[in-house]
Image 1 (cartoon, rainbow, N blue to C red):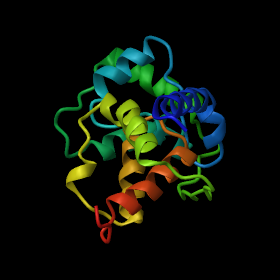
Image 2: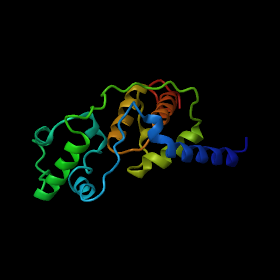
Image 3: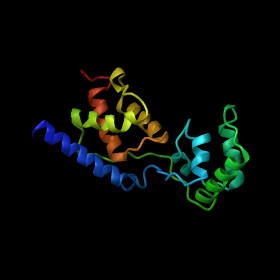
Image 4: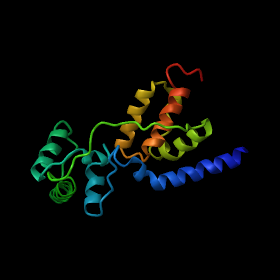
Length: 185
């Protein structure tokens, strides 16, 4: 297959997969949709500089429980000071969307089995499209076990990286093969 044709197929597949991402990941990792204003602004001003919003789905708390959890998680962080309107918007959103009557998302990640793997070109195109949204590619300066690569990607997804479980496992396999502790490249 010609390289240009192959690259176009990869890009088309990634575009299609990105449109279906939440369905592919359904049931394995939370993907919380960013709410409308004024909650969106409150999240950007107070939350998203340090973490994504997907971890909210791991909890099912009433309003007071959310207030206590926010205080507990930020007790050592003097930079988090919610003003009255932001606090009200966040607590309203959290207690409505992830209230005590909701079902918390399970914390255990179960990696799906992948039958197809990334080629070097596909992996690089994928990382250039996803990873470089927030930072430069640093994977070529380190070596990790597949488990450590998976943990790193789960952390990145928790910080807002958009990648499905299948995409992540294909990348874990590729990184383990190319940038693993026993890789020769």
